[in-house]
Length: 537
Image 1 (cartoon, rainbow, N blue to C red):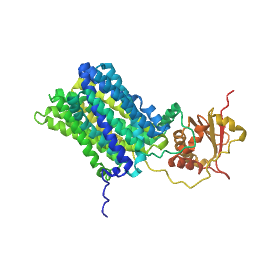
Image 2 (cartoon, rainbow, N blue to C red):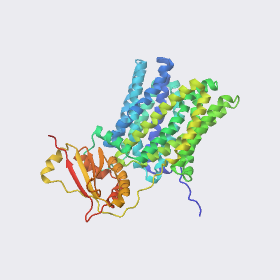
Image 3 (cartoon, helix red, strand yellow):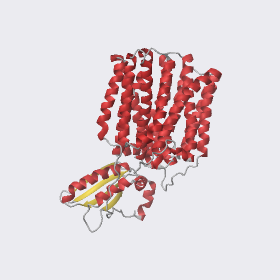
Image 4 (cartoon, rainbow, N blue to C red):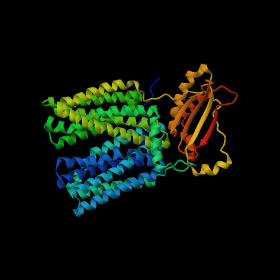
């Protein structure tokens, strides 16, 4: 039988809403790189010390690490389209303020860092919401390639933005670069206004901010699939971060080249990422997600080994470094897009932005720690040996991670049992429930044949995770000491409204876990369910 032709790398662009927002986001990302170039260049005249210049990049990225989870919570509990418009409007306003203060000549180095941090805070608000929006723009079959196209757009902006920023600065000054960035934000705002999002309807009030963050953390903690995705992301980005920490030293000290070469090597990485993104549909036709991430990890390790070898090649060092960066870019987009797609597919809509925020927090944390450790190791043993060490350890870790699967099996089919159904609330308690105060205790009583004990405990282990994912604050299982066939499952939620949210949050895998436990119940009727509300004395 002939093999089906892999989908085109540009297939998601056939969807009008995705195409509109992708093009606008490409313009916005280009503006951000122009702004970063202008801020770095301006700092060289305001305070030309290495530490102050390096703080510009830190000020732009630190908010993404600090605000990933709060931003994800906000993106889940408010209208996502309006939230994205607000984030872009905030960055546009800060960009205009930066432009005006620069043009007036009243901007100092600390003011530049403060406004750069403010724009970075807007980026932190934008990242989880934008990632969680992608599944709304394309069908599930096109999601992975849509994420790849987002990565391609980011790398195109990274390749074009700094060069365009240098041209604008040379032609009209840094204030013109900041004005260009603000204009690019306006383009994305217009596109978001034109997007007609169909927001999901809900009969329940919005979640509170702090409880939404706690629910997001509990969901990730009770999701084995997401924990595996985050673990594999941390391993890949931790060892891969050696390139970011050591490339400047490799160019300056190892190869004896200047900033132009540094920029060209970064451009080579962008080209490699774009090329890798275009080839990913064919790679996915041959490899599952876990195999693709492992292949990307081995490719990134090979790139680090090649970069470490470059200083030892007298005439071919520049070519080896360029090839290493091309391979690194392809590996980066292969692993990053696959892992992010897996995280999105493992997260239901109600918690998706929070889950992506926690994923991004882990990703940036691994990058920051890995980059810092690589720099420290490089000062002890040399840049080349440090790159070799991280490359070798990264390859070993990738091979060790093979048993942690990214493609999780679907829920097992279970015959429809008598599912636990609690009684309706008493009419006299309606006013109390409407106040939405006090925790709610829920319980289900089971009668289990002793021969089914092991199967029941295994089913309840899955059910525990399902309850925690859907909002439970705590969960316990008790066995009757006088009648070992009798069991009670007990869990609590924060309020009556949180209890009502449970049914909306349950996914097919969660319903399957409930069914696997219920089908083991022995009795004329199904498992007995009850609910209790806490009363303060």
